[in-house]
Length: 349
Image: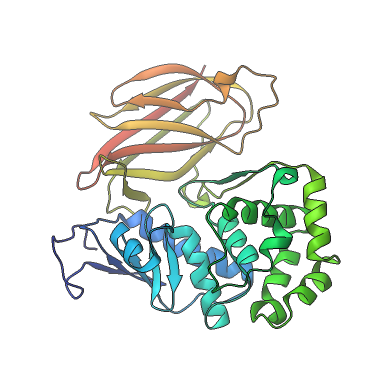
């Protein structure tokens, strides 16, 4: 796997990575870690599986800010075109949803409201949860209005994305994945022949009535994520958990680089606590940073906020910290191009 790009590369010279489902071309002297590529492949499979499809043969990904700027315009953070996906680390999971949908429909499919909403909801994957907060009763450009904007017409604006993501989140929560997918796969919707009829037949209500029900429900926040990879689950040996590894850009679970320091970040490893615990946390490393972050925890107010707060240590540090009873992600930051060995030791007190 090539890790380093070249300055002033021509199209033919740009570094490329070929994975099971992707051909990724790097722009802007960019570097991409193996874990990022693996997560991108995983996103294609995840979205395809949810839609009941075989993954596309090969998706072309043009990765880097300059590619996005040239092909998507100054307003958008990424886009999916007939020539492939143009994205960066902030937009890749969203745009891969569009790429799967385009392959499914042979080009542009559906309507702005549902395709962008579905892309937002499904973007909550290996790097960051998708979080949306909206006050439905205060929204002026609501679902009934946005449903009238077909894809391919420049009537959708960035401020509409939270509304689309919030409305599709409400549909998914109220009706379930199978019903939502049934609508998205309905040929009357997919190819734009009679999307309103498909909506009524699937959900038993009109889009206008659904808009009113969405507002009346009064739900403000939705979070969608799949941060923890079961293949990287960390387990306790009695009262101790010890995890030794390396934050290495060439390793299949290290993502990045990201941030102004070009961090290569070990992600997707998680451990669970069945009870509220005080833990002795030791981060045995000559450098780097450790983060322990709650995943899907529900703060009911019974515990002090520090039980749910992110925990952080620098290389060589140790501390006694309080943890809520839930799942916690282990994140270790290194630097792209360097292999950062470490040991994390947790001891229940």
